Image (cartoon, rainbow, N blue to C red; front, side):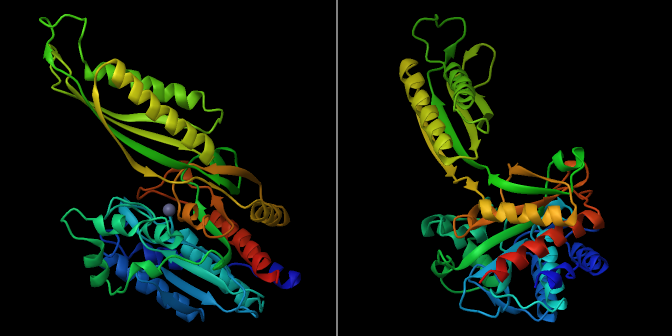
Length: 419
Ligand SMILES: [Zn+2]
C-alpha cells in the first residue's frame, strides 16, 4: 500500500479550476466571495460540491441541518470511518480559500487515493459543515456544534436572523427537514478527523514554512456585564460614598488583565473589548457601564479557573463599590487538545515529502474544535499571503495548496489503512 500512496498525487490544475469555479458562485461580483448560510449562492455552492462528489463516485448523505457527508466506502465498512472536510459558507466580502481549501482539497485527496488504486480498510468521508461562519444567526460552527451534541435544543430554537426568522424557516427553504436531535454523532462514529485550512495568520509565511500542524485549538468564553451605580453632578456629589459605574468597570478590566497574566498558562488571553458608559457627559458621574469580556486559552482547566477568578473579582469589586451587576456567560466553549498520534502522522508525512513544518496553536474557531469532542482530531494549516483572510484578496498559491493536499492525502491513507 505504501508505494501506491506515494503515487497518489493531487491533480493541482483540476483542484485550482474547481476552487475558481466555486469562488464564482457568490452573492457579489468577483473577486468578492459572499455565501451566507442558505442564501441562493450557498445553495448553488452546495449543489456544485455535491456534483463533484458524485462524479468522484462518493455516496452522499445530508442531515437535518444540511451537513453533507460524502463517503468512499472502505474494505471494512463497519469500522468507524476517517473524515476530513471544512465549510464553504463565506462571510460577506470574503475570499476564495477559507474553508474551501479543506472541502475541495479534501475531495482532491480522496480522488487522488482512488485514482492511485488504493483500497482503504476504513471508509473515508468528506464532511461539508453547515454555517461555520456566524453571519446569519450570530453563532459560529452551527453544523459541527450540532454534530458534537454541545448545542442545546433551547438554544437552537431561540436562534433568529436579523429579520426574526428562526433556523427552521431557513432550513425549510433550503430543503432540510426533520428533527435536529438526530444530528449529533455517536462518540465512535468516526475514528479520526483531519481538517485542511489556511492559517489565517502570518506565522507560516514569515517563518517560510509549508505546513503548520495544529496541536491545540483555543476556545473563547465570552462574558457580558451590566453595571449600575448612581449618577449625579460631578461637582455637587462629594467623593465619599460615590457609586461610580465606570470606576467599578475599570477595576474589573484590570482584574481581567491580572487574572489572565497569573493563570499559570502562557496561552491565556483576556480582553475587555467593549466598555461603554452612560450618560457620558464630562460633568456627570457615570451611572451605568456595559463591558464585554473575551477570555481564551488552550487548556480548559486554566481557562475555567481564570473565568471563575474573574467572576469572583466582579462580585467583590461591585460589593465594595455598592454597584449592582448583571453578569451573563454568552458562550463558554471547550478548547481542544489535538490527538498526538494524528499530529505525529502529519509530521511524518511532511518529513517524507520534504516539507518544512512546525506544530502550532489555532487561535481561531474551526469546525475541528467541535469534531475534537467526537473523535481524535487535528488540523493541517497552509500559509496564506500576509496572513490575510475574510477579505477578497485572501490568497494561497497553487503550490501551497498542493502541498497541504498532499500531506492530507498521506495522512488519510495512513488513518484509513490501519485496520
Ligand atoms: Zn474557515
